[in-house]
Amino acid sequence: MSIEAARVEDLLRELAPQVLGTLVRRYGQFDAAEDAVQEALLAAATQWPEQGVPDHPRPWLVTAASRRLIDGWRSESARRRREETEALLEIRRPGEASEQDDTLTLLFLCCHPALSVPSQLALTLRAVGGLTTTEIANAFLVPEATMAQRISRAKQRIKSIGARFDLPPEPQRAERLRVVLHVLYLIFNEGYTSSSGSSLQRTDLTAEAIRLSRMLYQLLPRDGEVAGLLALMLLTDARRDARTTRDGSLVPLAEQDRHLWNARQIDEGVSLITATLGKAPTGPYQLQAAIAAIHDEASSADETDWPQILALYDVLEQVSPGPVVTLNRAVAVAMVDGPRSGLAVLGTLDDDDRMGRTHRLEAVRGHLLELAGEPGAARESYRRAARMTASVPEQRYLAMRAARLR
Image (tube, rainbow, N blue to C red; front, side, top):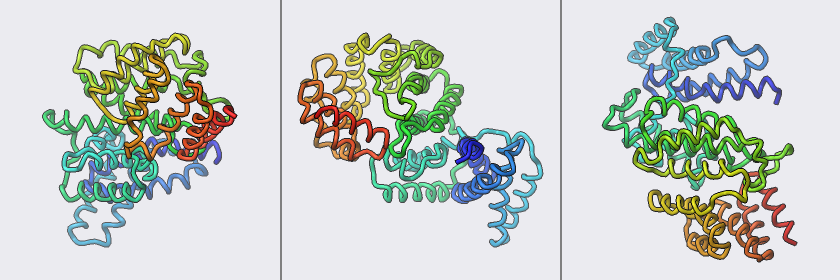
């Protein structure tokens, strides 16, 4: 792929949810609007690398997608002809509407209470985050076919209930906000450690998750969990440049060159969580941000305050229990009480079906077995983990760890 084509691809990914939001606000047909936007994106991906990016790329996409909607309506009933006329009038009145970013409103629409929580998450990841069905399935630890059906049903449900394209009123916002935060968290995680492919990271996804979280924070600056999520993303993303070598190989946290960490992002993240923690109801994102801050403020791996991290994980496991929290807590237990204690915590996850779809349990087990002085068992865990992940950098890293234990 040429540099220009790659630049166009990044731009289209950024603009896609904004253009979809504009069309849904104008015409109220989620499913048809998404199809039209996909066609417009395809046209842009073909034309722009050769002809150049338009001076106003978002209005270009909005107009192209709107025309595709209209083309479809021309073959429908007289009722559709009236909508076509209104659409044409809208296109001929370019102004602030075409430059308005409706992504946040689209985010809340996808989290409509008429949808189940899994459907809310899936639809938002697809429409706003731009993830593929495969990526979303990996994020949810479910088969791809199951996720495809879930997304399709969610689109049909949005259409059948006639959901309005507006930010929800204050009484409904808190409940829907919980899902919105989870969605942004998943988008960021998929970008920070891609579930498949040749690259460890997808900066387009992490950047979009941070951008949307900033928008949400501007809308709700007093919400502790909104601030906590933004702080968590900033503190985690700050380590991005140190996570891989020049050839793309993975570098674990303890071995990273901390001089490569982004000091500005760390300062912003620490300031956010310091101003929030203890001043609002404590939630999982604030606790995770506090843990990330402890890692980022340590001048070396040896100076990490593991007892404090373990204390925070103990609270997090009470506030938001789950297998991933337990997995991470096992590492903290190992660092404080020894690898055998950490392995005992890991053992509680062996019968959890959700962990059977991810390589992380075996990867952590391999690490703790290595620390416990069991190279043979550690090697087998690393090998099992390598076979379970679709991420090439993680495969190589785990295979390298196994090879070192001969």
